[in-house]
Length: 100
Image (tube, rainbow, N blue to C red; front, top):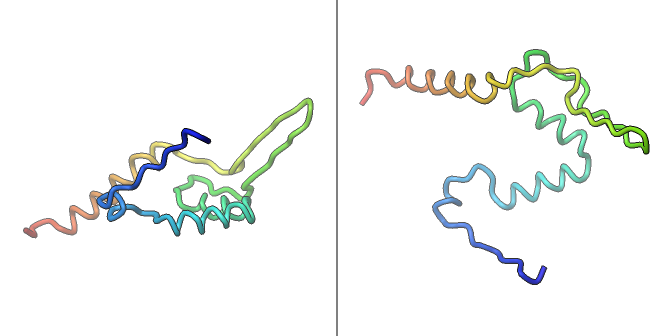
């Protein structure tokens, strides 16, 4: 692209990141090489009520497009978006009670 601009990442962001450029590139290569295996492992990073055994099922045809990821598992979105972080925070705070 002629108008493509690249903005440098501020040093303060780099210091607090969870994924470096090198880590991202490594993850990208793994996902490109074997996407189902990659996403199967990534799916384990969240909490499941009923864990999945099937990572991907896709049908691409003229009459039907059907895309299913982790389709035999069951999630609780609230648990993953809120509750597990509150539990972590509570454990961290209760371990520090009485300390200054």
